[in-house]
Image 1: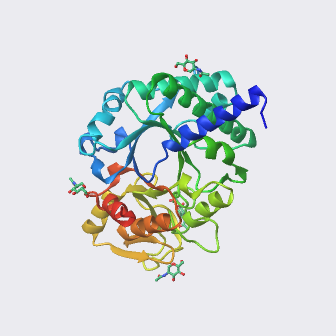
Image 2 (image 1 turned 90 degrees about the horizontal axis):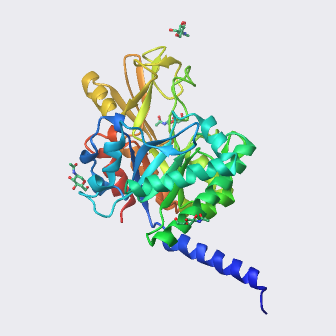
Image 3 (image 1 turned 180 degrees about the horizontal axis):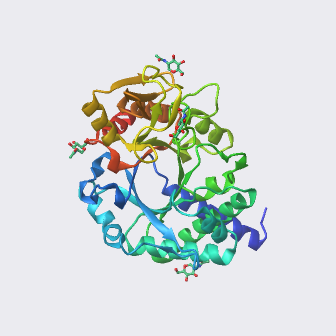
Length: 369
Ligand SMILES: *[C@@H]1O[C@H](CO)[C@@H](O)[C@H](O)[C@H]1NC(C)=O
Ligand SMILES: *[C@@H]1O[C@H](CO)[C@@H](O)[C@H](O)[C@H]1NC(C)=O
Ligand SMILES: *[C@@H]1O[C@H](CO)[C@@H](O)[C@H](O)[C@H]1NC(C)=O
Ligand SMILES: *[C@@H]1O[C@H](CO)[C@@H](O)[C@H](O)[C@H]1NC(C)=O
C-alpha cells in the first residue's frame, strides 16, 4: 500500500526524529548541580563522581525573552565544560536556565506565544554552543496553570525540533534537553504535559525535596525529603509513582537528592523526634543548611544523630536546634531505590554543599556500574 507522498514524507521525518532522539539516549545520569555562589570553585568539583553536571543558572530576560548569562558569571560558565572535563573527559555538561529564584511569570509569558518561545529557543541553543555545553536544562519553577502546562508542552516540542534541526545543519551531536520538575506529575492538581515531555526531553530531574521546611511548615519537625511518608503523598516514592502512573517511562526520570537540610527550633529540647512541636527556623536565616555545615554543627555541638530507615531520613539535634537532612544512609538507600525502580538515575542539588565528596561517593557507589 502506497502512502500519499506528503504522508510518507511525514512518516519518514517522524522516524528520523525518533532515531535522532533515541540514538543519543543516556544510559545513566549521575548528576549534580553547581552554582557560582556556592563557594566551590569549578576546578574543585570532583567530576569523576558524575556523568552529568549542571551549571546554574542562565537567566531569561523579561523583555526580550532571550536566555542570557550574567556578566558576573560569564567567565566561570564559559570555561565550565573545559574545566570539569579535566578530571573526567567524558562528563557531560548542561546549562540550566531559571531556577527557584527566577520569576515564574517571565517563563509563563515567554511560553505563551510562538514568537517569544522562538526567542528563548534560538538564544538558548546559541548560548549553549557558544559556551561549549552539551545540553540545556529548563528550571521553570513552576508552570502552575493548565494554560502554562499546555504552553510548556508546545515549548518543549518546538525546542526539540530546533535542536534536531541545529544538529542536522551543524553536523554536531544534538544538544541534550532536560527539565527540573515538581516532585509529582502534577503541580498541585495541574498536570504536566506528559506526552511532550516524553517526546521532547531526554529526561526530567524530579525535585524530590523541600517537602517540609521551617518557612512553610514551622510548627513541627519533619523529614524534608522523605522517601516514604505514609499515609501522606508527600514523599519521593509517591512522587516517582505519580510520574510513572502518568505514563512517563521510568527511564526518563532522575531522582533528586538534597545535599542540604532544614533546621527547626524545638519547643522542648527533650521532645526531639520526627513530628515534634517546633517554631520556625532553628538557625539564623530561613533554616536551610548545607550538608557540610550540618557536619560542622554535629561535631561542634556533639549533636545526636538519628537515621530513620522507615521514612529514609536523617536528623540531628542539639539543645533546641533540630535539623532534618540526608546523610550517606539516606542517599544510598534512595539511589538503590532509583536503580531498583528502573529510573535513569539521580541528581544532587548541589555539589558545593557536599562534605569531602561523601554524599557524591555514596550515591555513585550505591548505583554501581
Ligand atoms: C574524587 O573521586 C574519586 C573517585 O571516587 C576518588 O578516587 C578521589 O579520591 C576523589 N577526589 C577527591 C579530591 O576527593
Ligand atoms: C534550521 O537551522 C538552520 C541553520 O541553523 C536555520 O537557518 C533554519 O532557520 C532552521 N530551521 C528551522 C525550521 O528551525
Ligand atoms: C513562635 O515564635 C514566635 C516568634 O518568635 C513567638 O511570637 C511565638 O510565641 C512562638 N510560639 C510558640 C508556640 O512558642
Ligand atoms: C521512624 O519514623 C516513623 C514515622 O514518624 C515512626 O513511626 C517510627 O517509629 C520511626 N522509627 C524509629 C526507629 O524511630
